[in-house]
Image 1 (cartoon, rainbow, N blue to C red):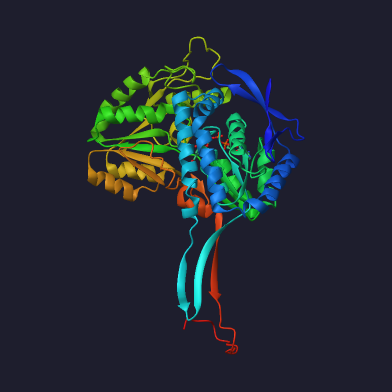
Image 2 (cartoon, helix red, strand yellow):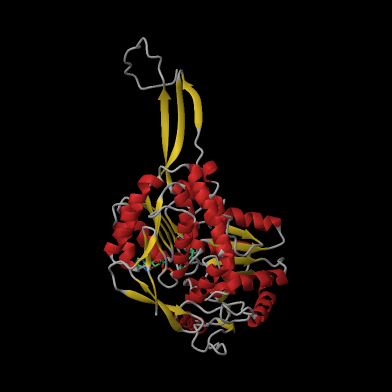
Length: 498
Ligand code: NAD
């Protein structure tokens, strides 16, 4: 049995803890590896390595950092297929999707390559006679990243390239369910010439997370995962005086107006709801059909949902893979059942799907539930599986009110041919990321990613300008170089410009 180890101080290490967790192959239902679960002492070792490295890394020149970032970019690019295969084997998503996640992560590395420009400060000459004022941004110290299972390559890359480019050192605690991508990433950072201790990986569960949240030498924590844990991370981290950005769960609505093209809309809804088996924080899980759009839409989505090719991620024909664990499968199947019990109509029922040759895999077929109302569990819960609920609304006002009354505010979309409806929607919805005829509006790396309400705790989104701001703090310098002769005496009034 392969054991996934930590990466501390530039090399693989087993640490002192012997606790482990199984790593499954979701397509076969078999265990393929075990991952070490760090103790508090193991986490301390990683933080100490990062703290020691910060002393010199924070003093490195911008050109030295960018040289390493550009090399790292080339290495990730060259190893995209290998990374995608690791992601697919442990997460279950299809290879093309896994390659896409590596590509989106790579875009953040490319953004971070521009750090000399991103860290430029301001300068005001002669704010008072003989006085200049300027600012620059300094790194924070040791930053930690705690990440979810659903994007084991991309989500950590939302964090560490930016943090490291800003002059910080980093301790990553990836999901214990698909830990291996982070090992390869650590090797690539080392190959790129990153000094030992700047990037570290500790695997683990709650014990490792709590050790990071409580460690006095961790300055900032970036978290992405479910809402209850995001809330907890934010509370505990900030109570310990740390800077925290904690991105939570989602229930993303797509409003479909009666004037939307049904073929275009149904194609995009099927991809956005069932791609990656619905295990995307930006997946569409609720379609809100306005007025006359509903019946035709449900018929078109149902037909396309039935045609989705479900199979192991490694098979070139597969369009959708399994879900992450047997427990996740059971939960999803249970929620689909609750929809039927609570009066919804299972237009397409993905329970009981069996994939030939992979009967023990954690597969759930695409599921379409019509006639869903806001009180039902399928609507209230983040299912995080290949399940699309259809809610019917009589007007755009009712549809917008529904989006706004949901506790989550990660992403949302509208399908329409009316500019007026789209503009109203973009201005009135209380959601962080909005798509107009775009179902999964994930911003490019040079913008920042993040939701509103229960989808984000903390005030900074990840990557883009807000990411740089999160990983740095400002210094503002007021400077005078007086002529040395002839002191002018002390002045006791509050300083004003003259
Ligand atoms: P999760 O919250 O279970 O786990 C996330 C991380 O927290 C993991 O590293 C895990 O080890 C750790 N963790 C789990 N339980 C913990 C506990 N009790 N105490 C301390 N740490 C704990 O999330 P997941 O199931 O891995 O990922 C899916 C969730 O992530 C979904 O809710 C999804 O919407 C969300 N997500 C959000 C975004 C976003 O950008 N907002 C992006 C991706 C995923």
